[in-house]
Each structure stands twice: as structure tokens, then as C-alpha cells.
Image 1 (spheres, helix red, strand yellow):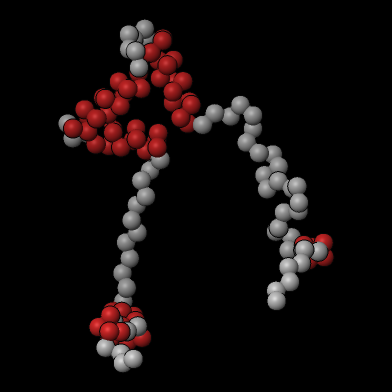
Image 2 (tube, one colour):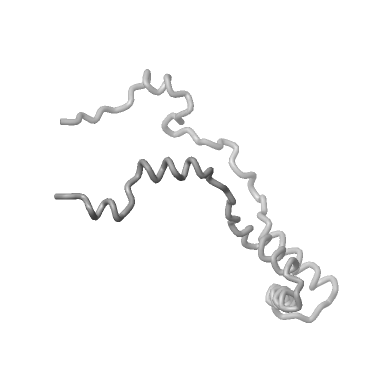
Length: 121
């Protein structure tokens, strides 16, 4: 039978990286009133539309429309830049190569499906 015991104060002292009960991992936290890029982006668009007296109902829709039109013309970097800034960059695949001798070693150690099916019961 496994007995569950509470962590003693002595055990916690041996693990200084663990937070104590009620302790925050980021005591200062994010400063109040800090705005993220999306908020700044929206505010900048609204400011430009207002200052330039541009008659657009939804400037963000117009901007995305322009980005798509530019992408269709072949100016994909413009579209990608707008989308990356709003939604984050897409995950990029990592290229790698495995030496042939390692592949051979793995094949020797791990049976193939055919070998699994041929084992006697």
C-alpha cells in the first residue's frame, strides 16, 4: 500500500526552486496598464484614420483586404508580416539528418512489423 504524506518544511528547504504556498512565481507581474501589440496596433490604426480623416467604417478589415490583394499580386511578405504581427509566426519545421550508421543500428535493434507478425505464439 502506498502512503501519501505531506511535504515537510525540511523537504521544501532542500528544493529551493519550489514555490512556497502562497508565493507567486512573478511577484511584480505585468505592470498595470501595459498594452500588448494587438492593442497598440488597433489604436494606431484608429489614430491614423482619425488624423488623416479617412472615411473607412472598419479600418482593420480594409487593411487585411489590402494585405490579401497585395499577396495575390505576389507581394506575399507584406501579407505575412501583417499576419505574423497579429497572430504570431507560424511554427517552422526543423531540418535534420540522421547518419546512415545510426539508421542501420536502429533497424537492427527494433524489429520491423513483418518480423512482429512472424513471431510464434
